[in-house]
Image (cartoon, rainbow, N blue to C red):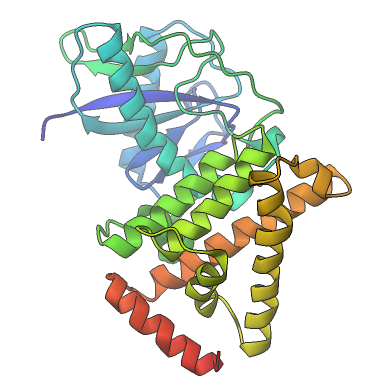
Amino acid sequence: MDSNMYMVPITNLVIESVFKLGDVYFSPPYTQAENCDLSFTDSITQAEFEKIQGYIELFNKSNQIVMTNTTMAIMNYENLSYQNIEGASIVIDRVCEKVDRTLDYLRLAYCQMGNFDTLPGLPGFVSDGFKTVYTWDNNTNRFNIVPGEVTLMIQKGIGLMPSNEPSRRDLDKIDWKCVFSERTDEVFLNCRTALTRINEAMYMTNLNAAFIYLMTTIEMLADKDTMLRFDKTKTKILPFIARDKTHYFELSEYIKYLSQSKRTEIVHNGKNIYELYTDKSQVLKELFKVTCLITRYVKVVVALEIHTYDELEHKRNELQRDLKV
């Protein structure tokens, strides 16, 4: 497949070294010549670091813009053409989606639902209000802007500065495998979609919508084709995350509480989530707990190398027997 080099700006993301997540490189918007302290993690080689430095230098020569509080994502991706602004927007969305799914790894590690102050910006959104990416032009030997539409995004906080930038030791972690595995089986893709939905919910300023989105994510993991009652949903999820029989029934009561006392009140009775808790900190704590239920299930199922729903059902029955539930 014919490919091309793309650069995608990410505001509100500050890093101090060059590293690689999946097949996407991340770099500060400057070179070692400009900042002698710039280095790279062992996720890349010296040769890769020098190559990325070259791209950053060429980008800065091609585009005389100031990138403050910004990280550049650099990757080879399908060579996409466009004829008009609508076509350019499709190109931008596809390239940015690839980078956004890569950022899932950092958000899952460092960000929490409802805490907008430390979220990185969405890929491609820049301070002038446009959503855009840059593509390498072999004819002119420069990075050219792909003209995007005005898509203003106003965001709170200073953004994300990871305390530990990704390195080679992360490759064997289950968190890495959940995000970057090349598996294409039905069970993994459903789990990966659940992680995507968590990341999407992080940017929802209406926490009612975020809560409902997370609850429907649990339903999706339980059965992607059929809408189940929550009393059936929990029997699909809990065997994989319960430590023992006592823990199983504790989690069962918690999910029953979420469904009847919170979800029903918000979805069917029109209540605002803030009416159901004493203060915002309690809302955020609840969202965090629901997120943990989802990520725990995903990690266990991915680690078990389950590829089909028949295998998943067989393993679920086995776990239920072991738990005596």
